[in-house]
Image (cartoon, rainbow, N blue to C red; front, side, top):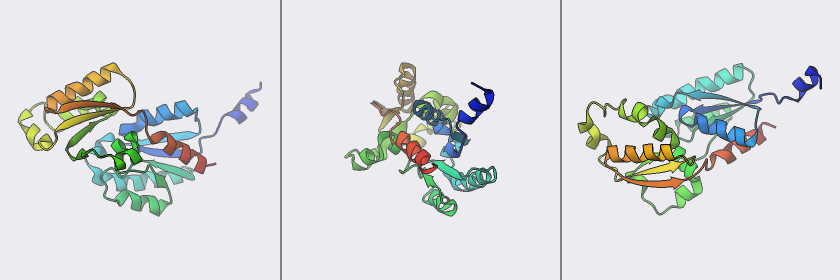
Length: 210
């Protein structure tokens, strides 16, 4: 097979997903499962989880950059994620779609299941693979809990349990999640979700770009 023919058979990246850094590994894993080679992934900092007011304006800039770089098809790899509808305004401005749901915990669980559940999640602290992997660097240290554990009741006093929504079956991550729950003084629960609605969202985004 000639090099020219090989080059012609390699799918061109024709869609950009601009995602939260907290789900970057999962987006790449879904792409690998689907054998997608036409998706270009860019991420905004995971730290915006702590500062959701940054998400919409930074997404606005990121979509503009994607258009300037020639990406006609852009998909937003966020749920609302605490923006209070501001992210939807950005999506409407640029005529792009985002992942459905209020937050990643919902779409990992499955938005329908989350919405129809009888569970009271107001007192639930959710842990994902990302948080299980980076609890110390993403939660404990930025909140000062490693230096001032007396702040725990202020941040987590209204929670009663920690629910680990696992994207992968990983004994080390489960142990990390259990340790995080113990540190926070919360009852620990485990639920394997896989990638939930994320897979369907990426499939739909890919179909829309064809």
